[in-house]
Length: 308
Image 1 (cartoon, rainbow, N blue to C red):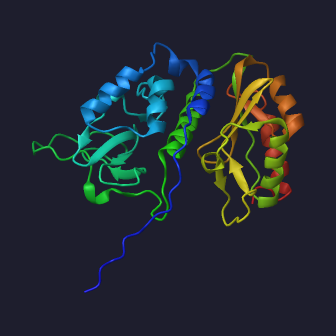
Image 2 (image 1 turned 180 degrees about the horizontal axis):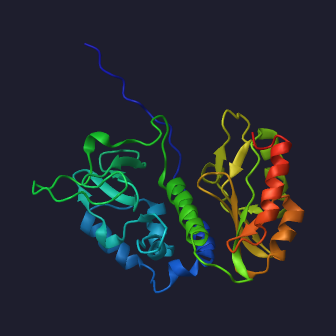
Image 3 (image 1 turned 60 degrees about the vertical axis):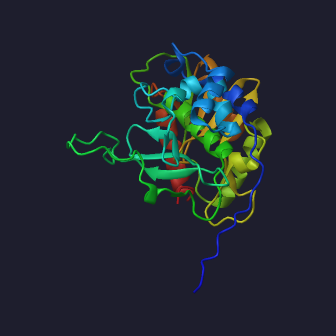
């Protein structure tokens, strides 16, 4: 009889992301933060006592610094959220922490996992689009399907610092991008042209951005995504860039095709033109200002073979 050898994963320390979350909070769209109140250390401790489990440090930092915003489920077109503290509960060995309003998948913790990494599973009782299934009158089933719980990425750990950091970036971006009927001349948010595809062009873009922006997160493991088939660490996209003067952020979209430029206050379109002169990225506003310029620039990129 042969026993299957248990997989042993390389581990690293889990980083604190408090500084990154504190930097991000002032850049949240007002429609996401209106009427919210932050969680306290006492709130988190009470939830942990009820669960009989200490939450990972990055998850605790999320709730303490920006959790009130990240837990909202009522912001139009923002389709992802972390569960509020009072909704956290064990379902067998699984603790759901993150879900979406348009999918039946969620992410959370497996109590028996010694690595305390991110697990993904399919939630029962929901359609693939995240809508409740009709009541059949049958006994209710578990919220999660244990057999579908699986290690995310299979061959490597996904830590909660990386997961929380990137999901917060996504939700902040969604909050600005999916606004409707924006006609104001001044606005804090703009979207870049499509990023070039060839590795050398992306490497050049990254080196250029580094001249004018600093990485939002100082841990490369959290803030970079390796380009397909690239082996050099320099050949990667940076998820978040930060600059203090003028005060703004560059956040990579979830599709990894654009950057979102977020200023600390409403600014005219000329603000993006200064960033364009420095970085080569062309931007448009949600009110469509600059959209023709972006389309013309992308056509030039296409003709130059930069979008293949």
